[in-house]
Image (cartoon, rainbow, N blue to C red; front, side, top):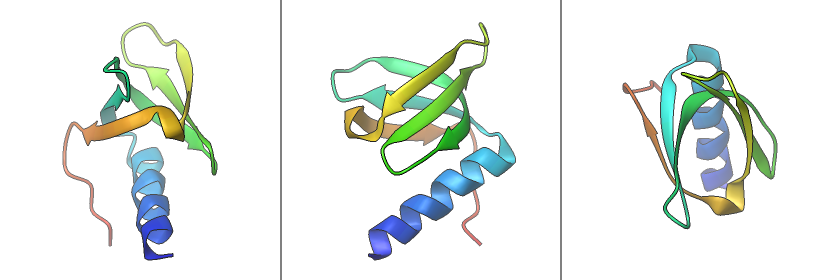
Length: 73
């Protein structure tokens, strides 16, 4: 269950710090925005440029790249 704890801490920090993210999906689509909410199965991103809201299933996410480092402490 350590993986879940790490995932929870990372996602929580992304929401709290409002750090811009680049998310790559499993089919190669690049989505940029700020994580506003998440649950066990989904992520909600607010677009940086257009303000659009995107809901992604975690199973479709390949990689999450924050614009700057996020502390896990």
